[in-house]
Image (cartoon, rainbow, N blue to C red; front, side, top):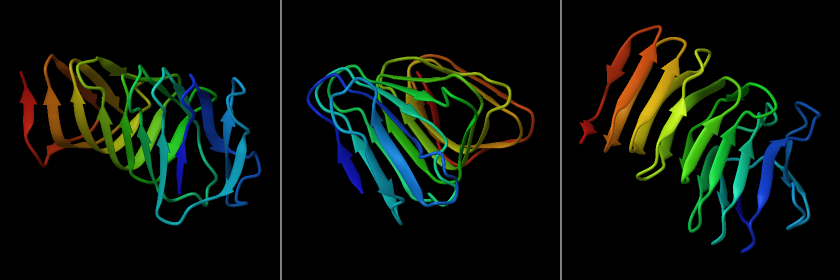
Length: 178
């Protein structure tokens, strides 16, 4: 399932409809650039593509039956993705986010592989309650905290990497910090 946002500066939230275990989620326009859309959870993948403007995307916890991998592609413009603005974010699947800024408000737990790509920008996901399984990164400076063990996939940074984990740190691919 793929949603393509408008060419306007969209401000959207992807979240559960409020009725947990009903297999539905909602993509809401917070600034009226499109009609909010309620949809049945996809089986394999969910993609959100922004347009060519500066978009704001908020990702909240989805329906418990939503188990498709999630891709958010910021495309052109300066796009910001906020993780868990309304409460702790808990996702069981893989998450791939490409944007100019990725930020968090509350703790983030992603059980699958997460890939964050912000190009030459900086990211701080420093909440001590975060819980990532496998992390892949492309950024300038990146600060990451994890509540237990974490596995690092490919890491490509042009600045500094600050990692705090309460458990083991495993590495399965190259770590490049220029």
